[in-house]
Image (tube, rainbow, N blue to C red):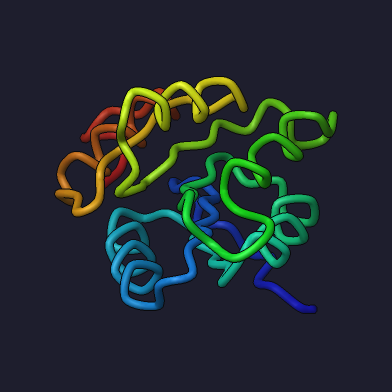
Length: 137
């Protein structure tokens, strides 16, 4: 597999792993407009491969995907030295206390509900990456 290697000078490398094409495309376009270099994966298997190869600065991850699901992907990434420090932000419709506990248990840095507001996505990313709004533009 070949992926872009050029990284935006001011942006961060962000990997979006979601099996819903509309969500992937929306997040990709939004984050690229903010100056980030965005990669996407259609499932957990592709997401793991891209995370290992690209070593992104942040991963946005859906929970409900065919095997491996987002929880399994996050757990695996957190057990690998090369990806253990990459923050994972879950974006999911599953937000019961039990679900949130599972996300935390596998090492999530945070979570956002689906449906989400793009302003909330930006704020969460800025917080996790230590960015300010002015540093992005």
